[in-house]
Image (cartoon, rainbow, N blue to C red; front, side, top):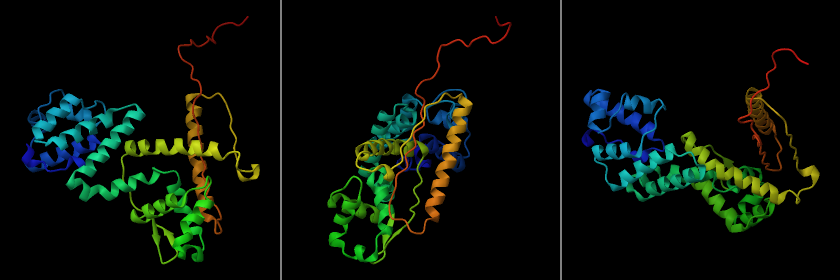
Length: 298
């Protein structure tokens, strides 16, 4: 079985995608049926792979180990596949974040993975620092004269940031953004570029969680440092049905699109802003019988 499958498990952050490509590869090379492949991979169960691929059944750790053995995985591949399955099945966001770190570390430690995926993994850290996206949008706003003096550029940008940053933090951000293709240095003029980063939703949500939490922390820190006319903060508490909750979520998505449209049409921006929208339930009715509205009233 190992000889007909050379798809690298290190190329994946989603075990379902890996299994789908693996099965397609095995069927294409040998013409085998799913049933025969299931037997060869030493897993049991009715419509085993069909249920995993459609999301109705998770892959257990025991079965992942059986598949690893059948495919002839080495120790590093076995460990990666086991953590890949745990990452895909884990509900706790903190544990999921720890598992993602293990996956990224394993790809760095593996020579083949390092050659093929190191740049992509580094680009995933775009949301690892709250100020990376801010500096990426700020650099193209700077006049060419300021950008040409590289000795003082980082210090100047640091003083512009809210809250302020040290020059080495700014320089590290600039280096990261250039190395990973988020911005380009055109001899004193910075231009935003758009690297294509394709990541499964589970990976993206795990990375963005810490980014959102950090921005909430930063916003609380700078709240009093900004005048009322330099910020807009408001909130509303209301009661909604599940259906209305979904309508509000849709309205928020459309509102975000409108904000981005305004930003795209702006021809003279002089600041980089962060708009954070939090819409979460504070209480949900549970185990409470509904009033009977039928019948006669007194």
